[in-house]
Length: 309
Ligand SMILES: [Zn+2]
Ligand SMILES: [Zn+2]
Image (cartoon, rainbow, N blue to C red):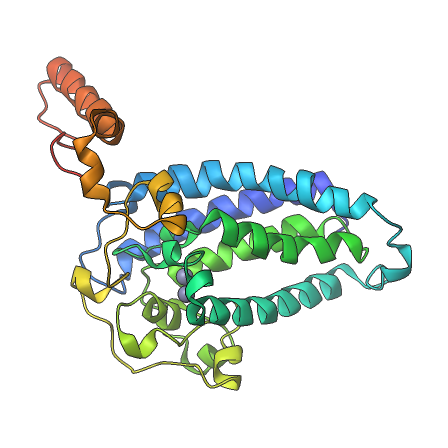
């Protein structure tokens, strides 16, 4: 089967859609952590899905490909360096998956050990509920660094353009899988492939795992470099068992501001403009529910306007 670039993009998108549906179902049927709400109604859904998954991904794809990679690509003649050009498509995909995964293991490990770089990674650990959508929560700087280092070599070393959407699909599918709230028993395979069993522990709020389970796709990096943590039990179900040990803003923009300056999000509520902005989504949803109730006689409320989330 010899697909064109556009067909590859189309099929990758369809496959991604299928993976999303499968994740949604498996999270409900085989939950790793019991009592986790359906992702549409859980705290932080808006931030994770609308801001990080849709808007941020869309904007950063343009920034990274059009404004970083493209200028570097045209800045010089890369022909002498295009060593993967003659390789088969599967070989190219495998090569870039493994080499980038090796890089990301070390960069991720570095982010956990450097106070400065931790600030580009803490957003990813800030969720108290981890599910297949929450994994997309990553600081803009972290995405720009990691995806430039991921996709620039694919372009300049002469890979088939289809490697980009294929790798994108693998990244998205595997990223959703390791963050999914699914109770998967990988058996011996967990020493090779990463899984929720290992990565959910990485999102747990325990000191002993703060410097462990850094792998993304292949868990063998952790086993090889002595950073695996697999205690054979689950982290627990309480909010304090998960996420960060310190307060972290819940708003998308404040999460990014927090990278540069520490502050207490709740103190900002004293400013009228901030309170209005902060409550706007909740008020819109509340108003919508009221309108539906009026017309149908139902008693639904998507989100009461007084709480913060
Ligand atoms: Zn981490
Ligand atoms: Zn993660």
